[in-house]
Length: 417
Figure 1 (cartoon, rainbow, N blue to C red):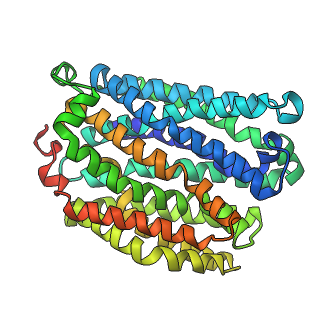
Figure 2: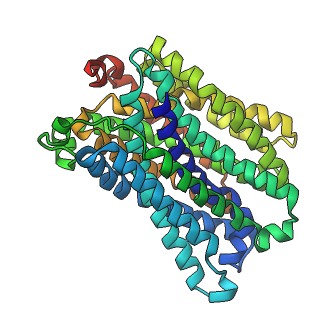
């Protein structure tokens, strides 16, 4: 359990730092992109958010190679240290008014650096946590990766809500938005200290095996597993970011709520979402990973369009909370086991590379573009088309899951000590 805590602490920090950007963009968009209406400013900041995702495949490849050839512990320590550096840069970068066009350029570079870091974090932490989890309870223990992933979002929201209570909107727009980035950088240093004490789970034999930590080793011998993960991650990442990071903006821009109310709704919804992860993770051990994925795919295809329409047409925070929570319960069939189900498909010598790279490719293309695509549809006057876009990708995830083997039975972790 101590190993789970140590590994997941870094995961929480990584995602806190990454999501703080999204949640605080309502307050700093004008500082880097001063011209245009609020939707245009948000479109620019979410464009930078999306570009950060493009670094994830590179991070998945780089840190997957390090983790498979040098050890999981080393890769996890480097990734959290890089996230710390990126947060400090954003906290200190001058505004457009102070240094002109250089300001958004520095912001972009910092986000690229963070994208590289978080791209490497997912594969290595998912690999590590699946390898230290106890047999028979892997679904439960591995779900803590997504507990901390969502916890990073929740902590980012809680910090923002606290600042909204302590500072005026003018202060938040002027300088208050920098505080969460400083908090994240400090937390990363604490996580770095915790990760130093972790035991290494990879063996000398796996690190020196033929093809260890290489793309060739993944694609030549485990190509089916790689493309299966890409297939179901596309829809999973898309709907996850739709009902988490983008939903705050959706409640403000589409439902018409004020920023503070939207933050409170999402804070409550994410808290429930966290509590659901171990429950759904344990459930997967009883019904099977594939069955969980089939439930996710079917329910998301049926529910996305009506839920998005219902949220758009409600002005009640309580109703919005209930609707968002229903959506997140559906997503939990996927997120609670997302790291484990990927890790169970690859052998130790290419596990971090296989998990990290396949996830990062799908996540960069479909997850990272959520806010940009959604706002683009809104600006074009066809916002409902975005709901169908999410539905189609979830249908693809359903199809991939239908033809997928049961990882818990076919995967490599079942034969490991």
